Amino acid sequence: MGDQGIPLGAPLTPHSNSTSSTPEFSAVIACYYEEQSIDEFYTRLSRTLESTGRSYEIVLVNDGSTDQTFERLRSIFAKDSHVSVIVDFFRNAGQACAMAAGMAEARGRHFIFIDSDLQLDPEELPQLLAEFDKGADIVTGWRKERHDSFFRTIPSKLANAIMRKASRHNLRDFGCTFKIVHGDLIRAFNCGPFNILSLVDVIARAQRIAEVPVTHHARKYGKSGYTFRKLFLSNMDNVVRLSEEPFQILGVVCLALGALFCLRIMVEMLSPFSIIGNITNGLILNILVVAFLVTLAALAAIGEYVIRSFVHLQRTPHYIIREIHRK
Image (cartoon, rainbow, N blue to C red; front, side, top):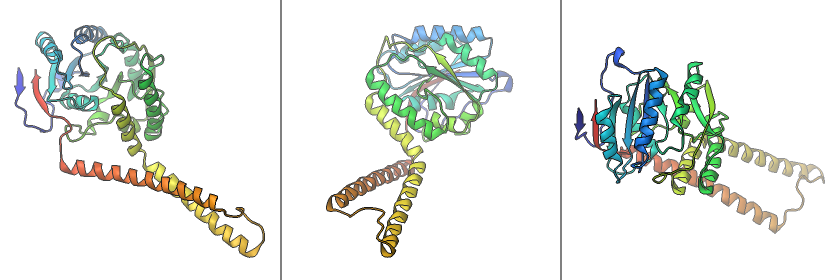
């Protein structure tokens, strides 16, 4: 019933199954300090999935919680045949890693994602499913009225603005985990411990996307895995993804300013007309400060690329599984 002792960093691959045993949906759930909420969440999610009349499985991943979360997952796994896989990490690796581990194990044709902290209502899944059945490749929730702290909502607004540019989709709430995604979109990225999937990348490669308003509640139990630092790093990840466009803009601006400078020299050689007035020491100082800041920003972006390339070449796994049980 269970598999343990998975080689550290070994890629995860789904077990072979006949087509008839492949469920239509895999609900992949990341859990972080959810010992107080996971039983209620599981009961509500399972009841909702049953009510849809679709075949499904549930994959639960404990993202390094040191409370009783994984013990609760063991109990759920033992009593429900639809809970096909439970995973436990050695230490907290982040929601993206937990979802990657779950997606690598999932067998379903399509994926359902939702947080397990009861801030979202599993009962609203049929609303997303109705849009998915209309032909959408991705259906994502939209938290119209959020009940998060100021330190969550402000970085989230910035992240949404960045992700709109990175994905070239004008979604209102990229950060809402409540989603249904076509399985082929997910599996094309071959996610695993060395390749963590970004849903921004998935959204960027989809055409038919629907957004559905969902209810959002204040967090009742546990603690959020998204600290201000993690939100900042997430924003930096997305800045790197769209950095090709800013560099292109910067190049065009520099070429335009260079052309303007050459034009100024030519005009002043032939005519008393001046495009820019007398160049003062203050103007030169301002130009030097702006040039320094632009150069520093460009070097920081280049440094980010270099570090990411180095880490990628080291083949260090983003997460390591302590324990895994499969049915």
